[in-house]
Length: 258
Ligand SMILES: Nc1ncnc2c1ncn2[C@@H]1O[C@H](COP(=O)(O)OP(=O)(O)OP(=O)(O)O)[C@@H](O)[C@H]1O
Ligand SMILES: [Mg+2]
Image (cartoon, rainbow, N blue to C red; front, side):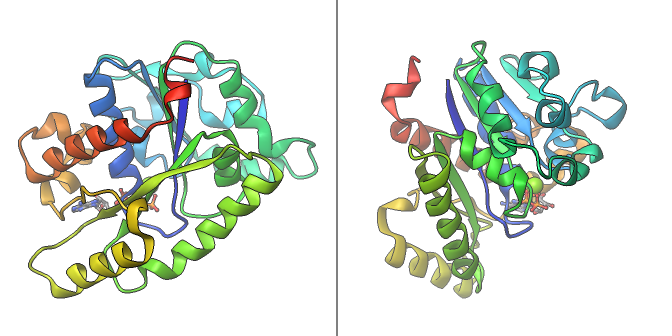
């Protein structure tokens, strides 16, 4: 199983939107896919139509009680896609795990025991705390959504420093799958300039496909559906399908069959 963390400590940059739509595209392509909602906000769970009363077991139990992923995963309305939902309990996990040895490796251990999926994605919260550290320690590779706005690059260097520390201390094999520009607006010169700037400084790390600003992408979660199901033909959905294709060419081959 390949494990992809979707992280950026900046809030509202499109992590969850990317997670929901990319997992849907992987599942549609026949991959047995798992999404782990590792954000106490639970937006990925809500966006997939799994509301609070239906969240029977959650990522909190995986981290704090060491319950297995398969016991916490539940099917979604998308064939081939399971979800480990999150609840607000997760916001206490960091404090509850203080002083617990190996707390950074909780998720990694759970994933190492899992055999039922081809690929697993982790939707991270907007911070670089214990939850995101667990995700980076568990992941084979990292996907970074980056919003096309003025301060985009500032936060990125901090994230890349964290990746460096995780590689040194917990997960030497952590790779960077790439950076995807989100909410790109062709009619907005600033958005264009930021895009060019990011590509100039980060080169091949940046995916060719960028995700346009598209109102259908922001409407879909209120219907509990991925945009890919809500409106398959909209520009945002088409971009996420193209991004998924590009991601597939970049995934670490050695892990695909494993
Ligand atoms: N390409 C897009 N076009 C228009 N709206 C978008 C797009 N991507 C995301 N949004 C909207 O922007 C808001 C933030 O997106 P999202 O929740 O995916 O970001 P996030 O990084 O997961 O946020 P958080 O850091 O709070 O978890 C949401 O309301 C979402 O619907
Ligand atoms: Mg989110």
